[in-house]
Length: 347
Image 1 (cartoon, one colour):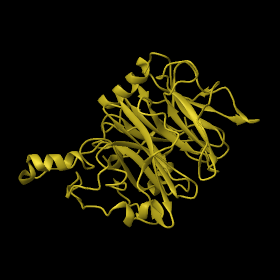
Image 2 (cartoon, rainbow, N blue to C red):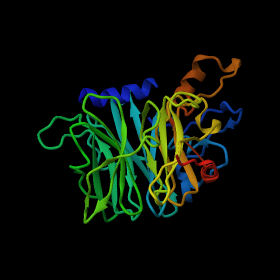
Image 3 (spheres, one colour):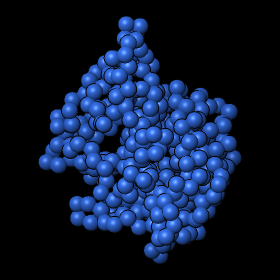
Image 4 (spheres, rainbow, N blue to C red):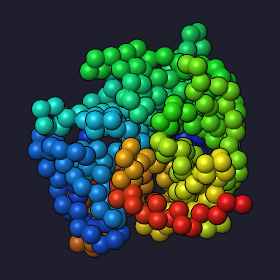
């Protein structure tokens, strides 16, 4: 892989699926009980309901103890995509689980994976379900693997067709990653120049069957000293920005919301607050369900261990469980996001 690709993910680290969920306490003091097996899960969101406070999403199935992040869900809610990385992103891939005849199937690697030598990450599904965008470092033509580009697959029956590089003007010799798409097909994504770790958010309009020249978004979106992986709402009324270097940050990379007016003006970034951002030095992957009701986000939190649990066997259990300090996917009711709109300031 090219050095700039590895540098970005190494910086992110610095700033086996198991059905076990450790019976212990998270930092809020809540007990986390063992979860049922995948065969027992049915209904929307693998049979779960979000709360007003963050909780692990599908512990033992999606959040397993592996480094896990990124969420994308098909319009019918019957396919959920997420990503895992091992060995500081040495092995990185997109997984998916789907509901068939009312039951959720065990997660699998997507059939369009580039294999163990390629990073495939950060899926985003269009609102008609016809196309899935994703980051990939697979070779394009004669180039070696390593360059971060945005690729896509198109729906074919119950699966997806062959992967294709999105090409210019979106992709360049630098890195392009974390696609997010609006109802009208506008693509938001992040880019860094070749050899640089400075990430900037761009927007490319979809017009006459192709993407237009990307435009750099203003400082309200490109906030802080660096930012990662911006999610845009379907109606383009807001973005969620994971940013570092903000004055009101709780811990490392914090999630912020920036609202957009009909005149295409952007508000001052608003921190999503203590419940989302505290104890979360590594958090750079937001997603909101297409109906706006549920907020998913990556966080790297740890459970508390009682003195009597301080032993080798318990450490082995923790290693294979969510809450061990590896990134996991948390979710919650998204109603609080719109409440923040009352605080939006357009300067």
